[in-house]
Structure formats: C-alpha cells, structure tokens
Amino acid sequence: MKLKILPPLVMVIFGCFMYLVDRFLPVGEFDFFGRREMSYILLAVGFLLIIVAVFQFIKANTTTDPLHPEKAKHLITGGVFKYTRNPMYLGMLLFLIAFGLHLGNAFNTLLAAGYVYYMNHFQIKREETVLIEQFGKAYLLYLKAVRRWF
Image (cartoon, helix red, strand yellow):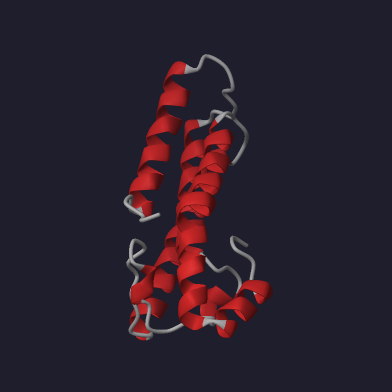
C-alpha cells in the first residue's frame, strides 16, 4: 500500500471534523478553569516536539518525507526519539487535543483517538515495515525499546 496523504493534511482533516462536531453537535460542550491555558501549553509542546524532531532529521542528513520512508539514510534513536518513535505525529496529536480543548466539545476526543487509529493503521505501520527492511535488527531493537507514541 502506497501512502498518498501527507500526515499534516490528515491532521487538518481531523481538525476540520472537530470543528464541524463542535459547530453542529448540540451536546458535549464543556468548560473548566485553565482550559484555554492548557490548550496553549499543549500547542507549544506539540510545536516544540515537531521542531526538535525535524532538526534531528536535518542534523542526521536524512529525509523527513513521510510518503517515502525508504529514503531514510540513518536511524535516529537519540534526543526526542529516545522517548517516542513518532515525535512529529505526537506533536500533531497534541495540536488536535489543544484544538479540541479550545473548542470545548468532549466528543472531539473521539476524533483525536480516530487520528491515532488512522496514523497507526495507514502511516506508521507502513513506515515501520520499510524501516525494518532498511535497518534490520537495529530497528527491531529500537521498536522494543521505545514506545510508538509516548
């Protein structure tokens, strides 16, 4: 199966669904003290994760192209990659959670979970298959040592 949708576009699509749920679903609204501030913190952490991961890819002189994981030249296991195998996707998930908090509709958590399912099933598994073929035992050991999301 060839990947055809860029992960940031997947995030935007799920974000649009979140907006539609908030706009048209008459139930599920919530509010709590610090909700807006929490959304800003999650947004900042997500942004930081993505930026650090991209800089690690650039420093290692390897590709950040999620549609062509076979172009990877080096396996990165340090920095943020010691804690999550997919810091960029985790950062995007944090964006969605922050957006869901901003909107204040509890049903948006289901869409954030849908994003995780979609990414696991259609993006990450394909990437992992390619990276196992490319990096062999080193990647298999990395899979056992580091969790997919966090």
